Length: 212
Image (tube, rainbow, N blue to C red; front, side, top):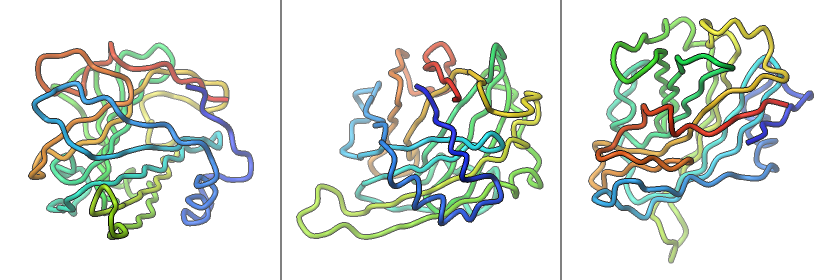
């Protein structure tokens, strides 16, 4: 995937204006359900762009249940209605897991595998901006709720990567939708995963990312 540079925005841009701008861009779909015992009818897509000093993401989700139990940064957001972005820059084996629930609560970890991950300091996570929109779906819709979350990730949160700028950088990553404590527990991925049980922490299944 090539991630476009948008020179008209930056990490200091108004997040609502950024959300409206991302609305005009093509969406990528998160459609793989690697574990057949957790099939659901959730629909998820996303837009991603960067400004050199920040990554911008907008997720679009349609599903039947809204459940939020986590309101604290670095909490167990994956148990709520949750979208996730995992990324490793350049040739680094360690990667960041960025997880956001439908209320815009964020967890960011860093490490080489599922175990012993380092959670970022909450002062850094406070630099992340989010914009949310939750609506009931129109009558006769496939799902009951429609929600969107726009996220601005300043380059500072990638503190262990010494990036300087995102321009012309490359990396590996994957995008996910989950809800571990929802009645219709589910696990979706952008790049497909081959594993016996649900596990997003498998970098061998990340796709290639190229920042313009």
